[in-house]
Image 1 (cartoon, helix red, strand yellow):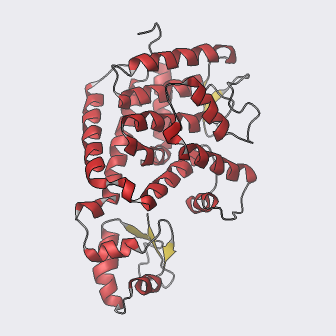
Image 2 (tube, one colour):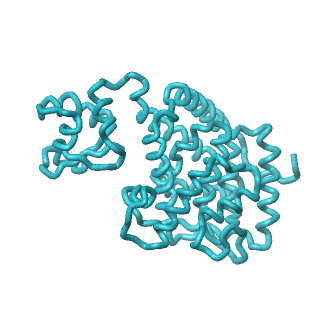
Image 3 (tube, one colour):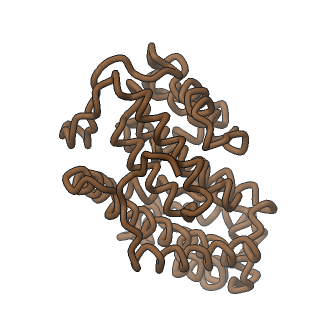
Amino acid sequence: MGEYRPPFTITNKMLSYVSSISEKIGRISVIGNLESKPHLRKNNRIKSIHSSLKIEANSLTLGQVRDVINGKAVLGEQKEIQEVKNAYTAYEHLVEINPYDIRHLKKFHGIMTKYLVEESGEFRSGEEGVFNGDQCIFMAPPARFVPQLMNDLFAWMKEARKDVHPLILSSVFHYEFVFIHPFADGNGRMARLWHTAILSKWKPVFEYIPIESRIEKFQDDYYDAIAKCHVEGESTLFIEFMLSQIDKILDELSNQMDEDDGQLTESIKKLLNVMEYDVSYTSKMLMEKLGLHSKEGFRRNYLRPAIKMNLIRMTIPDKPNSRNQRYVRD
């Protein structure tokens, strides 16, 4: 192995997460059959893009991100709309990424930041800091050191992949990349994209697992882990944090795929089949789609069980009988 080795310690907690994640991925790959679920794949990809951009203060809603991707007109800042278009292009070409080739990193940064930054696809020439909102967590290394630091990181990855599990290696890369902060803009987006790219080379199903949504949900914990690792001078805590989030997102994905486990009634399956993700429906609209006439039968056999299993949600949960109530498949 080369001279450079990012400082981290493999702990029992990491190994436990690696075992748990590997088992869950195996089950999802065998039972889930994501290839036969284009709506689920696209929905998870949109969640990834929305969450990753939201972390970077993009204000577009999940529905607006979906509309941009589907080519619909959206009222919003042109910069934010372009961020969505760029991110979607990058994620759509995820399978083409060689995550161990630094040239691919620059190429995809160029895609991710097209029309948005002057130094698109090039390492930064100025100084940068790592921020959570307005709070500076730490200043990144001086720009003159970036090319060598990135070459060292990629050289280490190429060697380490022979011995270090991809789940750990991808988390190490994520932290080291954020620490180096090699680009003038788009570092967070690229760190999360590359994390997914490394894992996708190990298990292709990761291409459609929205890890970014967990990071966005626990954004403060994410930045706290980065800050603590910066103080301690090694990435162990961050690796454990990322593995815990991946482990949890797989539980969420398993719930999404209960349909394939035979755990859903035929009625719930029919209900889910007529619902697009993140689109709101009235009970009347759903009954018409299902060809049903009995409102009580619809609620008893279709609606309530699906809500109880967290497969769909009410837009006004504190007023379940509101005349303005809508139902959304997450």
